[in-house]
Length: 296
Image (cartoon, rainbow, N blue to C red; front, side, top):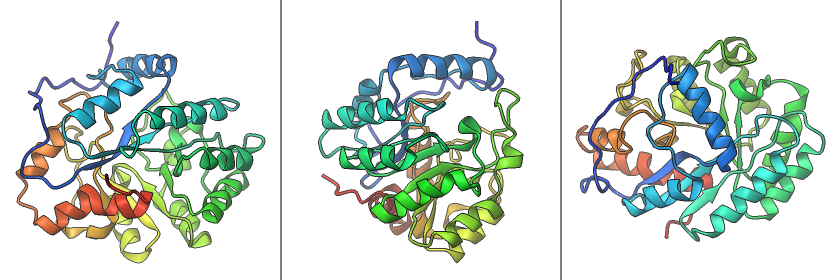
């Protein structure tokens, strides 16, 4: 039974990406084995919103690529110790089905045994970085357990995407993201590891001012836009996209875990009036740099 807190929007979806847009790299797409996806759908039904696209991982990738998205960055995270190796093998195999079109990210559970070895194996298999989620994995980004992850990524030249913004805050999480996550903690990480490239999803919601200032100050920090262009959440970014550092913002959809049409934000971008150079940076150029993508 659905008890979603936030509404599903029955907006009309397009058959293709808007013609007015340049090459699109979706830098925030989730893939998981079917059993984990089903658990995620159930969690969202109860504590967040009703997910509109309940697809398998391969279907997720085919859906976007067949509609004109040029490249996909596929993300995952281990919700408990002991499953990261299996998830990383799953991701590597999935990427092989879409040569040149999907960049797969590895994961690890912070603090688990052999974390560095788990990531090195994942990189050797072709995965191009690491995804972590502080709300789900309950890590403090300044703890000693995180150092092996930062060091391994830094030495390998692999980027790290971390959901360490404070929102969404939910009683369903086993930890309080307002205790674990803030921009000051993230700044300490990027200062301590200047060779580590970090992306914070969702424009760092809700610390918009702090994250705007951080990307202006540090060259090893990026933000993605996932779900912040859809006019869905009641919270608003006080800055327009053209007021933020244009070479440090990446487009991401959060597909398939969304409650509205897959192209809602792309339509908004096509009609936004943003200058061509900014759209090219956001939609592809910045992701190429951050994720070391060779667009095909």
